[in-house]
Length: 235
Ligand SMILES: [Zn+2]
Image 1 (cartoon, rainbow, N blue to C red):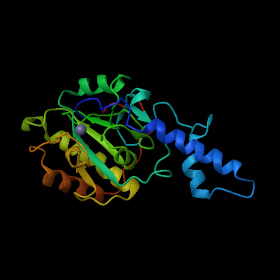
Image 2 (image 1 turned 120 degrees about the horizontal axis):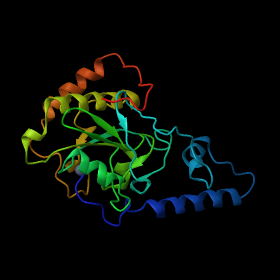
Image 3 (image 1 turned 45 degrees about the vertical axis):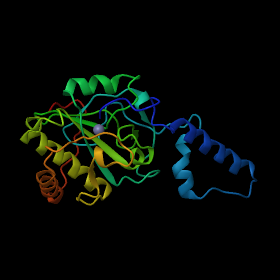
Image 4 (image 1 turned 180 degrees about the horizontal axis):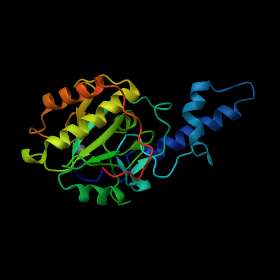
């Protein structure tokens, strides 16, 4: 992650929503005969005032993870992959501990948060649903297309990245790749440093990409695990 993003939000979130809202209004006013294409409606319906997609409190997207909600101010409600295709996983390093990441992502003033935080013992917190857009990449379109995974530790400290952390994170990423049909390669699984326009350096030189991709591939090829029924399950 690193620092809060400029302006608090993801830069253009509010402007984007109001522009789209105007577009909907314009289309409706334009005339009776004009009907929005079905996929456009799928993309836009949840942005209409009063429309909220049903979510279950505490529900998670990956088996074995613990739900710990981020502040609503650090993400944007969406309906992925119906409105935005998910085709990237972005790997981050906290530059701090697990608890620090949880604390700042719960802070409405932070302006940023990732979907997941991985602890060095392999425990994972999910803080934002995959269908929603987390402000983690510092780039609006990349936020919309990606899932962000934070790892506790420091970019310049190789010992931050433990075996259990790699294994748990790789299982998580493999599941994401399976769910959204994302290829397991370095084009689709990237570091924050590779996001266009970023000034962040994570995950840094000590993150072992060869090892990570190998683990993700192995997990990806396993049969899909059953989804966790219990959101309160502890790992
Ligand atoms: Zn980052």
